[in-house]
Structure formats: structure tokens, C-alpha cells
Image 1 (spheres, rainbow, N blue to C red):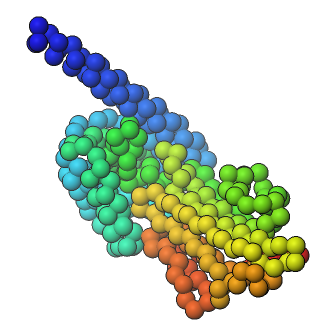
Image 2 (tube, one colour; image 1 turned 180 degrees about the vertical axis):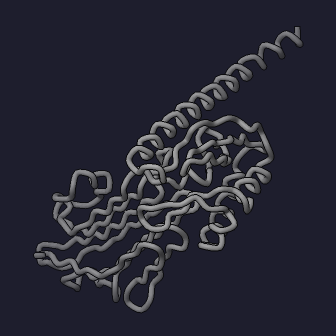
Length: 297
């Protein structure tokens, strides 16, 4: 009887595990079929120089460290952008020479990601068509049935970046910023919102938000000033955003609020640092500046 009860208790766990595996496999197949369709569209629009995903197959389960070594080995093909629009496929060895900091960051990101996964991870073999030839690359499958990273599709941009910014009252912010609203209707708000292009698997390469909010009373005296910043980036990419008051805005005394902001994004490095009374931004794409809020402006 005890053996029977033990068997019954194990069966539901096995069924749940099997269901999760099936869901992950279905998600992965769907993701890769979408990637094939997207890359074909890019092939037609860009001609013979475009890279197209032809096929994929499993290479089985391997230790996470082994998977990372294979992704970063010198002869692995890598898609690298020469400018904002044009790319080439080069060896990992050449890519590391072109931008060593990017691949130091990538290795650190992969190491961190692999430590959060099971002892063994699945690897895929991806076959691409590029300039009349076939190229074979490897991909690491994430624990949720997505692509954790590969050197080609993960870097291929399938949309444009967008940066929106302005200075408005809280009540007049664009609809897309409602989720960021946290103040009163008459608060003055300076905002910058940036979203990077998506890669072949639908992941944004970078994203950032900057928001500076000032509140004034009926006498036009500053009552509060607050800033919110956040940024994120996909593996191998970098993004930074910062904002702060300048010269310490005095609540209950000043009739204005002065602030500084900066953002940087793109391939590593991308940093923002406070220097004197403002921020400096360093990286592939950067911008920085200062602003002033007044009750009647």
C-alpha cells in the first residue's frame, strides 16, 4: 500500500513537468518560425546582403559553461553593425577586436544568466543564408523556451528605435505616459522615453525612462521636486539614464526647480556620470542637458 501511495504522489509531478516541457518546446518552435518569417521579409527588402534563417535543430543538452564557451569561441559567426543600418557577419575573434568592451560585458551577462539556469541547457544549431552561402551558428535556449542568446538573430534589428520627450503639465502628458503618472494635474513634468529596436526574437535591445516632476503652490513657490530614472538592455547591449536636481532646489523658498539629465545607449560602453553641475554621457548614442521648471512656464 505504501508503494502504491508513493507512486500516485509522483505521477502528478511527472505530468506537470512534462506539460511544462511541451509548452516550452511549443513556444520555442513558434518563436523560431516567426524568426524565419521575419528574416525572409528582411531578405526581400535588403536584397542579397540580408541574412535569412533557413532551418534550426537541437544540438542536445550541455553544461551551461560549455554552452557559453561555444557561443564565444573565436570562429563563431557574429552579426555586427557597421553603422545604424548596415551589418556584416564576422568571426567572434574579429568582433572582439572591433569592440572588446562589448564582449567582456556579454561574457559577464552570459555567466550571470547561466548560473540561474539548470546544470544543463539546450543548444540549437541555426542555419542562415547570407550572400549566397550558408552559415551555421549556435543558440542557447532559455528555461522558459525562449532564446537566451545567439550571435546573429539576437543582434539583428527588425524595427526602429523611438525617443519621445517634452515638458508639460501632468494633465497634458501623452497617453503613452499614463502609466508613469504619479502626481497632481498641475505638476510640471519633464520626460524622456526611449525604446530601442527589437531583435529577430521580439526582444527590445534597450529601453529607458527619465522623469522630473516639480510641484508649486498658489504662491508659485516650489513645494517638491522628484526624479525617476530606469533603464534596461538586452545581452551585449548597454543603456544608462540619469537625472538629478542642480544646486539643491530649496523647498518652500525657490520659485523654480533646476535639473540635469542624460542618457546613453547602444553597444557597450554606455554610461552617464555626474561632473560638476551636470551629467556627461558616454557611448555610441548619447544626449544630455539641463532644464528649469517654473509655476507659470
